[in-house]
Image 1 (cartoon, one colour):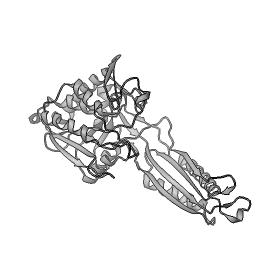
Image 2: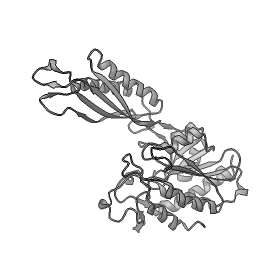
Image 3: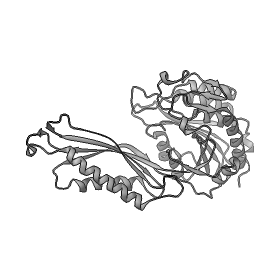
Image 4: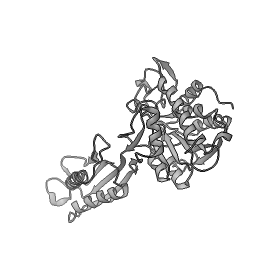
Length: 386
């Protein structure tokens, strides 16, 4: 199928639902989006390969890896093909009907971030394989908005390989080389229910959780005293005690209590070490209490991103945009690519404060600028690499 013009590619991707959600009732396959991308990429001279991704619903999710050219090095232009859910009633127009007004293209995934895949194809469609001294790869992943299973599958496979990568998350076309990591943990305290008139009849999980929470607040202070990074507005790690559930009646000793927390890591911290410290702090807090602790990994986590300020792709993106590479507070798939030895920058059109919101939009002037920037990156990284 011949690749259509840019406007039609943008409209088609937005109009193809690909919601990723932890609620199975809302979760969708991303394959319909990839089935649109594959023939466009083939028409543009790419060799297209599918990577099945293991998810609870086997066969529903995949990554798409399209390669033009051969050899070492090269450039990956990457984006995730899924979106978050939405409430159409809160939108001014149908989120799955692309709508242009006031120089903006409205629709779910317009900024975050299916549009970037169309922009990458537009930038690459006229590049001839014979002119490439290093490969050009366009990568579309699945499940970024939930489990990062698509990015994890890439690491497990050790593929694709390249020297540089740009992930087109919405940054207002400003390069980003730093972001915090994240983990989410569930902590459950199990005690013994009983009549509240006599505390000896039970063992309060709620009171045990109070000790756990105090220990976590103390740990947060220790982490903030030990770690900081000047590249962030908020330089220290943060820990949020997000929600708590326990007990069922005021005249009944609480038999079980559960807390969910979120920890944001700065570069220099690791998920495995932080998770171990959290569990140790909770265990110490309940020593001798006869209460039981259980832990649930709510989200495996994404490591912090810390691409070298002097990396070639960082310097190139700074030159092309006129902006120094900075940091953002949200997480991306970039740390998975860096784990594979790929020097990665996050940079794309649109703004993160429009993502995950009603009336998400892509500024069309930034779309045109993105194509120009990507064409130059392809020239510098693949046609005339250093």
